[in-house]
Length: 432
Image (cartoon, rainbow, N blue to C red):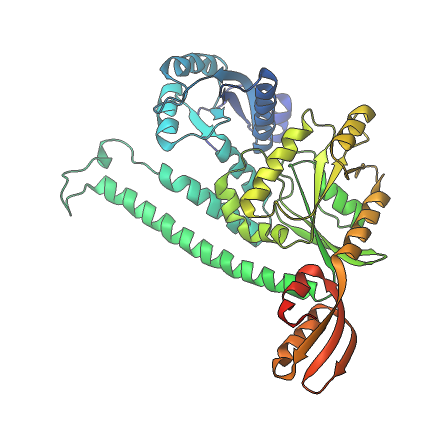
């Protein structure tokens, strides 16, 4: 996590050998009334995993229960002073909050702690920046980071004060600040245009794939649920798989041949509780392939202490991008490490769900059978009568569907076709 701060004085042998200096972090989680101690523990444990993935080592933590948020310091002056003493004693470089901080709160806490302060959003953005490899992924991460940083720009010292309040009388420091803001705004506008173009290209590519009469299935789920491992097990995709959060940022699409026809499997970025809105907006062109899928394969880590919490977090993100109402197959993964009694309980709670181990490649037959059934159910046979003056509709049916019969009558072309329900809906006015 590239946040600067005090230099660490003590190095482990491994770090000395590698020449890598990792930051020391102090974790803070503020929980609202009604949150149980167990839920609070899960939250700060996840923050610890995020911090480790970002490149810092947690050296202490605090869980605070508060009825109200302090507008100046988020946690109140007394608690801030206590954490300042504890973090100083632990010789940390950065204090990481599990909550979203306003620019003012972040600045005030940095002054109290005497070191860098970051929130959960900054940590996740940092991880995405480390793992993005494609041009589109790097552009999306940069856009999210700039949107996050823009309101946090501020001046330093007396040079930033105004000379007067009138037009044309602002001090040189504030002029520099406004110049920085203008440069970032221009860069944001440029990134938005580039990503809009990339999104247009991706939509064209998805249309080309749909012409091959392939069903689209998107792998969704909480980060580190095993989506990339499952994609590799089904298609030999060769996607990077690591036991860490957000190891895959860039989307991957692979073709899976089934008895009922081809299925295009897409591995998307993993979700997480309180996924930063900046990331959701920046990655909208990537997440569009989820909204356009025929089926969502929702992968859940059955070995997680609270799988239901993961399911709820994924559904929140799906709702935000407009994909919550799509057909969904719930798949509980990691049965090789989850207790059998837990797996059975999850299957009984969620009717129609299945369980497998992507790592051990067990239970994949059941998933493929369900995909075969979904594809057959999604494709229907329908008849169309298209007037001759609408030849483009006939061309579209030939392009998007399988034409079973075609005859030319006195005033129209009669066709019987087989295709996806959603595709046929585009031609509903000509359907018999």
